[in-house]
Image (tube, rainbow, N blue to C red; front, side):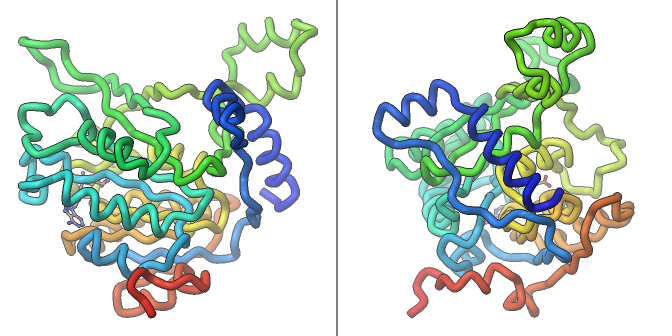
Length: 327
Ligand SMILES: C[S@@+](CC[C@H](N)C(=O)[O-])C[C@H]1O[C@@H](n2cnc3c(N)ncnc32)[C@H](O)[C@@H]1O
């Protein structure tokens, strides 16, 4: 998409996405507007993929250097050896506070999780994080997205679970949101009826509808072609929807619980820079597998991949800000 078209889309997006939350912000004397962004696909994007502890990695990043953090933390239900923290909430506060520091004013943090694991999740889960974030006023909750998956396990003693949550937090009221990038087409009958309605603008009908905060998408089946071997790998489709709506061409997306490297795979295709790290060194081989079927679809740009040894050449370090603790 060329620079000017993209800017027009952003402006219209903001106009159309005003809703009750925005009105509430206005009443409190704050308006939702985007900061100035530079749009246009870069010629090349850069992706760093390597093993690191989440907090160690965050402490290396400059202030306000990241547009979007895709965060799929351990669920704390002992589903794997990385999935159990004796004091989950205290541990999470460390990466949440650092996440806020590295996010741009226009930036967002999306946190995957479930709220159905109360018994198993002893020392904390997404529900505890939501509570902590709200009570410490760390971020503003914009949406709790319900990921409704039709494929799941059966159950006898309760209703079979068919959803997971994705909490979308903004750093400030000036968060970036490109609704037009993720609108859904109206079905043929609705579209025909709307086009006959003189009160509605045909351009708006053509653009499609707001996808709402309930997203129906399959989880990856065991034999899915996308699978690279990580036990809790998320589908590209859901990560792509978040990246399209909450980041822009050439901006930086960070995933410090990267697992299978799916976020960087999506960013390669969508023309964003990325950093994907995980405590498990297998993240690099998982990412290589993610890229084996990559065919440079039309309109995509070139990309390069960095490891830890050449991480200092990543564009995150050219923003001019300093990492925390730097003098
Ligand atoms: C739920 S999985 C993420 C899956 C990923 N979103 C995907 O789609 O492939 C959580 C990941 O957090 C990683 N992890 C656990 N503790 C960590 C830590 N302290 N620092 C960095 N990564 C950690 C685990 O190795 C695991 O891969």
